[in-house]
Length: 125
Image (cartoon, rainbow, N blue to C red; front, side, top):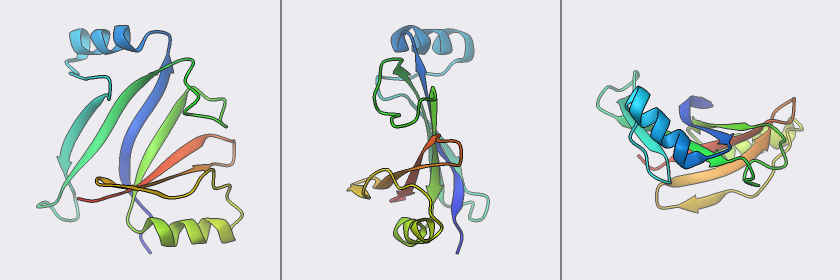
C-alpha cells in the first residue's frame, strides 16, 4: 500500500501571524489569508493530476498542535487514510483523534516517535 504521497501542508506557531503573513508576502511573495497560502502543483506519477500544499502561520497560543509541545505540524497527503490508520494502530502508533471528513478530504492526527503531532490528509482531488 502506498502510504504518504506528499506534503499537504506546513503549519507553525509564531507571535504575530498577521505580521508573519505580511513579512512573507513582502519578502518572499507568498500571498496568504487567515487560512494561509495554497501552492498548487501537478503529481509526478500522473502529470494530469493536480495537488496542493497548504502553508499557514498560527498564533503561538494555539491549542491546535496539542498534545505536542512543538511549534510546528506537518500535514502529509495519503492515499487510503482508513487503511493506514488501521495499520498504524496495529503498530502501536498514537492516534490523537477520530477521522473527520470534509468536502475537501479526510483528516486524522497522530504522534510520531518524539511526540510531534502529524496531520494525515486523504484529499478529494
